[in-house]
Image (cartoon, rainbow, N blue to C red; front, side, top):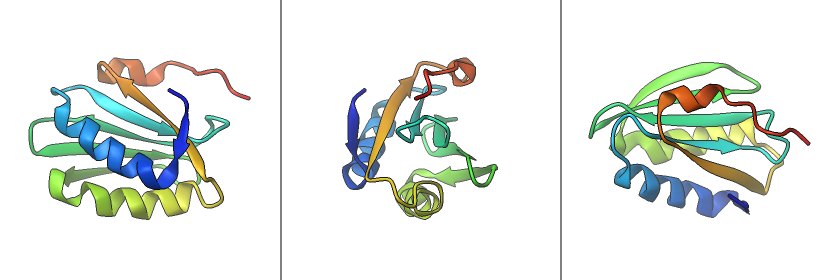
Length: 102
């Protein structure tokens, strides 16, 4: 997917996650693809959010708490970024795929 504004990315990710079937997910990456956030839908109400970059953490969150958590993590992982890349994952096994780094 092309680069999109970080403010609209959070809204788009929330809409995209609502449409996904478990265990599909979404990955948000920086321009250089060296830091990111991965969201895997475990069931209809539970999500696994993995943070990779400055800090490496994994969170279990409900659908209601996703936006607040994404805002907090995005400020930490993408402090100067204005644009991010958003990819849809068909399964958690797609998580290990190396993407071209710039």
